[in-house]
Length: 408
Image 1 (cartoon, rainbow, N blue to C red):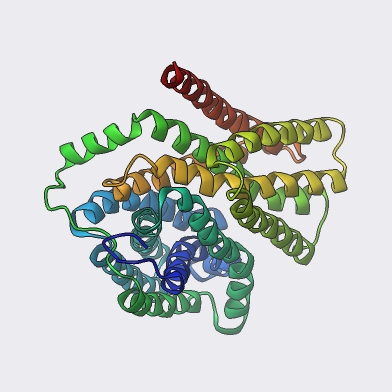
Image 2 (image 1 turned 90 degrees about the horizontal axis):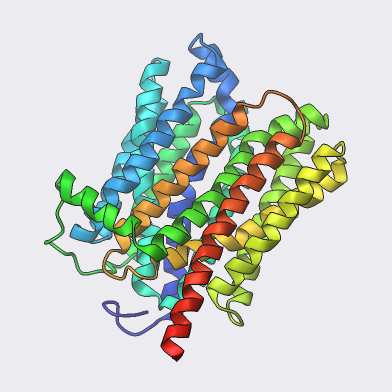
């Protein structure tokens, strides 16, 4: 490791990465674990599944606002104390969800659950930027993606088992216990990775100005937005996958679950192979080349839909797209954070918030299409991935000009 943590210790770094990966996984696990219980929640509260969906809306609002709030707080007070505070908020919010007497209570409790989960999402990326050399950040984030990527695979299975055996409310008791174990892990294994900066302002105007300064940094803007549009593509897939495969291709719930898990495994596999490529190529080279491949695959996916979708072609193309997205997320995050050694908390928070906003917009866009088939998803995938490519291409041109000036 780097200062202020002293000499590098590979074993300690591995333990820290496991803790940080679990912190990031807490966010998606909090979403996916209770999804199988939507029908029962609607029955218990005598409402519709659509209204139960407001518990997801409040969560997404909380996770976006929470990340923006934790950024400057973690730059001012360090990473560990705000992180522990966030985990305690998560713990009490999970208990509140468990005791929810009505849907309104659950909606509000889910908002505070997200506020707590946001602390882990911000701290994980910021700590990686703090303790690892710049050229190792993308590889370290790939490890986080390996752990985080497991959440969407196991969460619905764990959630279904708990709901069938003990009821949907027990999910939140499980999450409360999980967060308590995370509190102990952070307290014992996670060192403070940055010197607190008491000069950081927490008043609204200077905070917003700092975020604006980060957002308008040319490198940050190019890479954070490129990464956010790829996340938008992934959220569009997640939102449309049940309708596409169970509605259009008549898969059973069990078959869909297996297929969804295979595609999630492709995403994880990509993030890990990315680490091997980083040993031979620069982070930008890999990211830019993959963006070209992704646009090509999205175009093929659209042509497949227009021609009358073939099931096997649809599955193969989606697997390849998700596999390459496994490269893009850690790489664009690392490239975005590169210029911000002293503002990693705020930069990390802004990246997370932008990705959640673009992801939510993509999910909303796909929900507007009521017709079954591949074309709606293919159209949004192509749009998101092409915009991501343009942002990377724009930066590539400016970088070539800069290097040419240096050489001359």
